[in-house]
Length: 182
Image (cartoon, rainbow, N blue to C red; front, side, top):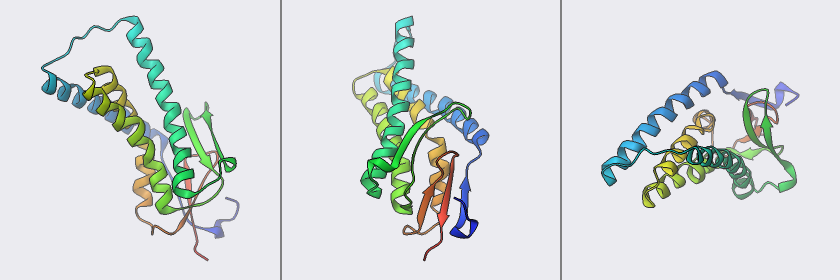
């Protein structure tokens, strides 16, 4: 955003704080998932081969890509944003993957787009892991739920604003602009 007069406020998350929250959530959700798995099924075998670890990290990377893709799908479904106005990628300098749009969304749509990946790449894989008795999928889901810490932080801030106010995503930084109503 060029002119400060165009927006009411700026929502910017502290990446160090979000990283720390994500790390703590990863540990807690992993432990909770495994304890719940043990409670449901009476235990599991801890036999991880090199192939298992490789599959875990490939699955993790794939789910991170899908996480960002689901943000784009959320922009499209909830904000009616055309595909041509969206972008995604990885910012290696900041160490984050991103999905963005250059079209402002109503707050209601932005909040839904922020949380869609939490459900589809975190909660759903974790539930499927419990159903098919795969502790690895339970852990992947836990890691992706925790990976949504930045989305949760943005969502928490957006809850303070009316659903119809427009939200503009910053194309470079983890920052949102709350636009003034006309």
